[in-house]
Image (cartoon, rainbow, N blue to C red; front, side, top):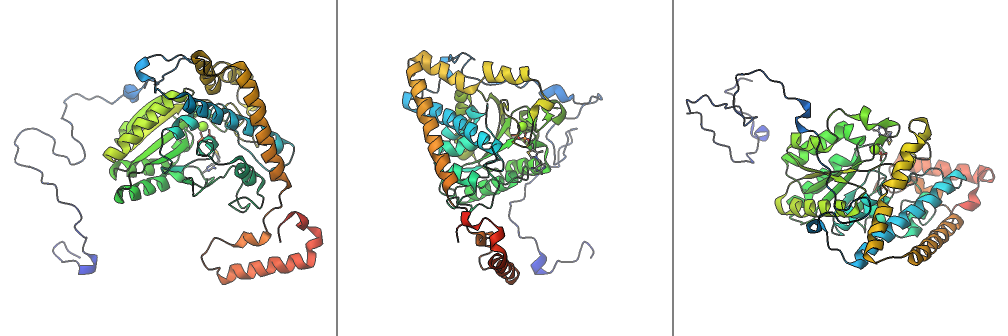
Length: 424
Ligand SMILES: Cc1ncc(C[n+]2csc(CCOP(=O)(O)OP(=O)(O)O)c2C)c(N)n1
Ligand SMILES: [Mg+2]
């Protein structure tokens, strides 16, 4: 087709935007390229990658839990700070029990959140309850802060009949429609473009809701991360990209993961407002997330928060991190720079907490976790027939055939399976 040919009507592009009128009349030596807004230079100079480097780390508390600059104190009530602390410690206790139960062969898999509790709770507290959360997998504290009960965490990890996913996901792949927490999916970074799509829908609906999308610094190397960042910037979506930079992607340290200054340094490249925070300072995470959320909605634009933290546990129960990092390194973060102890120091300093309260809360929270754990273990597993449901609105014939074949197989050979542990 030549340039002059008119397109048939159904192929004509729908004019959606007002054409930008550019002035080409200037005789000045000014660049006119549509893709950049800079001046010409007459000296050959490559841009140094370290031009954007050494992005500072925003914090509110020092390691002893003292507020550094009173202007940055979020001025939270004692009740709210106690909720932060109780969620962070309850998560820690749940992690210990579920990690141990995997070690004893009671569940198939687990991932702990040790050391990253401040990133979960600080960010969750800064959101509205109806903001939509897309997690990676190490964000159980966000769901816990939203009130997801221990019973359901346990039901999911045990894959028992009370699990809302009917036992069809690996442990830690939580999801909860009522709490606006999208079900976790394992393939890394798939949540990033999905989250941007959801944020775009919120914008089009004028919903005054934001999306928060969590991911690790390892996942940020995936192509989906680039696609997501660029779509969010160009479509001007109310989304918070929340990177948990915990130093490792399984055994890959950050020194092998990227060459630039971490993840925050990428934001300006996409035209995204960005900040780096101390992820072990729950108040810094709270302040940054709260302000980013406010502006994301008010201005319809994405924000990137890089929360610096440390993964104290192994990557998962399938990993042994002693093969690639030293005990001294782990001990430093566990003993010297832990988000839970930093907040406890703060609360002790304010007279909001004491040793007695600590002891009794530790005992009480452990009891609650143990009760939920024992109940979850006693429950039956979901019926095997659920293997086939919930994928299609109407079950297609090939799935019906498979379902019938499984039922027939179990009628004939059921004695070889532990069917007494499953619902009928
Ligand atoms: C597409 C894809 N590639 C590889 C994996 C295997 N994998 C699971 S977790 C992980 C590391 C992710 O590290 P990071 O994003 O930093 O998160 P962290 O585990 O540190 O919280 C890898 C490589 C995967 N799940 N999906
Ligand atoms: Mg990581």
